[in-house]
Length: 307
Image (cartoon, rainbow, N blue to C red; front, top):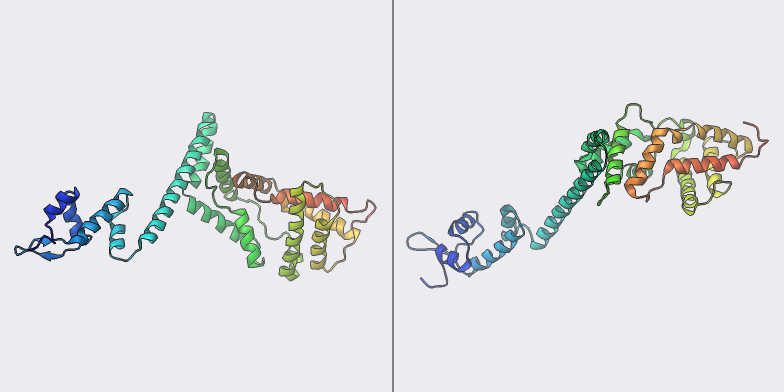
């Protein structure tokens, strides 16, 4: 027998890995056996040395043996392993950051408030499930006749991903929105515009245009008043109702939107909490609704009839 093969003891001495560990690797199929001795003992070739070096490097990264087995068998590439492990580490870090924010939110308050926060923050410690619950709620609540693309955009806006690196305020706000949606009788979005829905896709398309113009005006800090945003909003509703854009219709529409769900205190609070969760990156719809309503009021001549 040539010295191109080695016994398990020789491998252990040369690599510094315990015989027991090497035997485990061998029994698990991680180490290739070159041949058997006349006594039936396993002998290992040069490939075993390379394999041990790879295993040791991967184990230094806390890679599970089952994962290493998929790599050495060719079932999973090393690049794929790195991508998978990186994703796992990032998920763990996100969970740790969320836990840190939760503990900070619980630490900076009096005992009574701490108990209240503990109760609501406990609802969102399983982040993926918390997001699914929120998403499913809004898919149930938003109008069924809304075009799918718009529905998906609205649901994404109403149920954002948990902040990747939240502060205590953002973590608490994210928990609070889950409390709101689980409150019995929380505002439903259906029914507000049933009469307008004669041509839902066209209506929503025009409403989206009005929303975009309103968002731009709010972002620029423009005061409410007559203009493109209000005109687009009125036009959408007038077309849906087969009406003309007249002062009387504007007064009627103003009365309608003034009592709509956009001013429900719970919904107003919901959008305010979303502001905190997203760092103000999403449009506060109640603020936009209020801007449009005031702008619509200012666009109506004082002597216009109620319609």
